[in-house]
Amino acid sequence: MKIAETIGEVRTQVAAWKRAGLTVGLVPTMGYLHEGHMSLVEEAARRCDRVVASVFVNPTQFGPGEDLATYPRDFARDRALLEDHGCHLVFHPSVEEMYPAGAATFVEVCSEMPKQLCGKTRPIHFRGVCTVVAKLFNIVTPDKAFFGWKDAQQLLILRRMVRDLGYGVELVGCPIVREPDGLAKSSRNTYLTPQERQAARVLSQAVFLGQKLVAEGERDGDRLVQAMKACLLAQPLARIDYVQAVDSETLEPVHTLRGTVLVALAVYLGKTRLIDNFIAEGL
Ligand code: AMP
Image (spheres, rainbow, N blue to C red):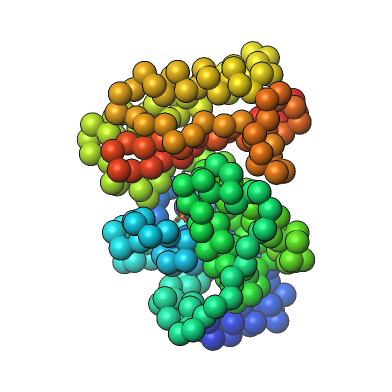
């Protein structure tokens, strides 16, 4: 496995692979990797001849007062994990490599999508995500790129960006990987105190309850959301940011569940904000 710190090194390697007729899969990450990230790398290795993973804590997707400075980092460990799971090239650029002095160009989906759900508390987040992913696509020129459904709003916004800008990249969504007690794996879970970690089970309990209600035939979005909120409110350490059922195309709230619906939630445990969701399809 090779490590590249510059855009030039990545371009040279990918060009050689393409000359040899090999397909390239990209897995963008912010590092501090866990089994959720590894599931993306493994899927990329199944579907593509060569796998590129990026490890970059992207400053433009963090708002003022968010956890950019304290975001967990351990590149030595990430590198060993990636090598074990079939990655061929790790792109680990500096901030200056990705954003040269004076960088002033952003990629933004200018619809309601980035303003909904997490966009209400993180107004510049998805602009930063789209900008860095667009840039990674330009550098790596992958055939396919792999993203987790854990960040469903991110995946749906990136699908729109790819469509709107005509990127020839296929986005592959991978299922949420969970801890044995149901909590979706996340680099931010390390922020939780033991009590908060215990209490965090309530997020997946609310998701599983929502899935069960939909499976039993619930089609009233407001009633579904109320039931999931009641589940979350039973945990005194949890503070609800949002629970919403939204249209998977526009991300705008729906009152009747029809077609494909994203049911998403965000909850604070102390200072840590965690997210979870499920997709209800074929309704
Ligand atoms: P991050 O490093 O948090 O930016 O995540 C990088 C990629 O890994 C994103 O596409 C995430 O959706 C995905 N990911 C993170 N956690 C999980 C998880 N528990 N299950 C599946 N994918 C995940």
